[in-house]
Image (cartoon, rainbow, N blue to C red; front, top):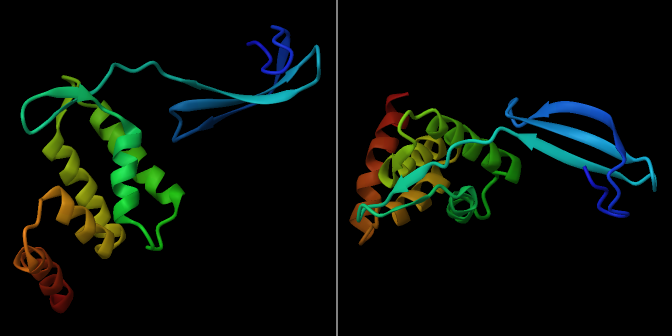
Length: 154
């Protein structure tokens, strides 16, 4: 590994530990030439997951794209970046286990909504309103009715 400061390929690993639920290894390194310390991550090379859109177009699964949508739904809610990242990692791991390497966009949206429903109901409704393309207030009421009924039953 080349040092990001002096560009020499002369380092030693100071510390190694598993991260992101064991799917990556974090290594602290020290350059033996200039003594600069830096961190590297080693991840499995995974096959590219394709998302099948509503119009049957296929595009690569982009973690950041999902993160932006979830972050908008969680804006000003008590969900921090770590919880959002954990949610995305959970979904990414589930999708990565699929045999054919393709997932329907609708299936991804359902995975996000199921998890948001358990984490924060306001974030869930925000995400659902965009994902399901709510047209008016009745769409919100129809989505909230089962949630409110479950709370009354408990």
